[in-house]
Image 1: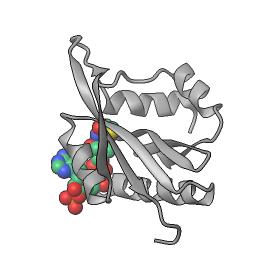
Image 2: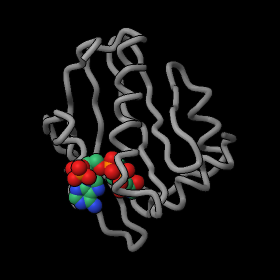
Image 3: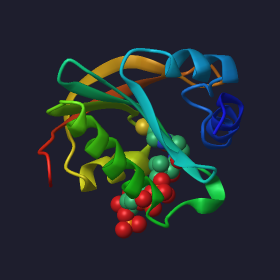
Length: 140
Ligand SMILES: CC(C)(COP(=O)(O)OP(=O)(O)OC[C@H]1O[C@@H](n2cnc3c(N)ncnc32)[C@H](O)[C@@H]1OP(=O)(O)O)[C@@H](O)C(=O)NCCC(=O)NCCS
């Protein structure tokens, strides 16, 4: 998929955090350790550097949700992270994002911190981010 297509999918999934432009997607993809998995229905983008992996974004098209796609994408993210030497995964999720938080909890992520006012809504409201983490075990 091109940065344009990934950006379009990101726009279909997000208002907060602000959706990424194609140029922003392309810039991220050129960064050290950045990778993505998925297709036109959904994608995950991550970064694996120095033994730690971070989920940069996870987006499933609205008409493709609750079919297990995000769970599959997260498994692909974790497998890639392990292959590149990461033993820990981190992510930030808006505290009002119940769907994503339920997904991450079901996959074994636990809250390890909070960033106050980290996300800004289109209306200019600030929402805390929950920092979640999981130890990765290759082959599991
Ligand atoms: C969060 C998101 C990625 C989930 O994608 P999905 O493909 O629908 O998720 P899955 O079908 O793989 O669901 C896996 C589990 O996550 C949880 N979950 C997913 N959507 C949920 C919802 N709307 N409400 C409650 N739990 C939910 C459930 O535990 C679910 O398991 P179950 O279906 O067996 O109950 C999707 O809703 C999305 O793209 N949201 C907008 C973007 C976003 O918030 N991304 C994450 C940013 S941190």
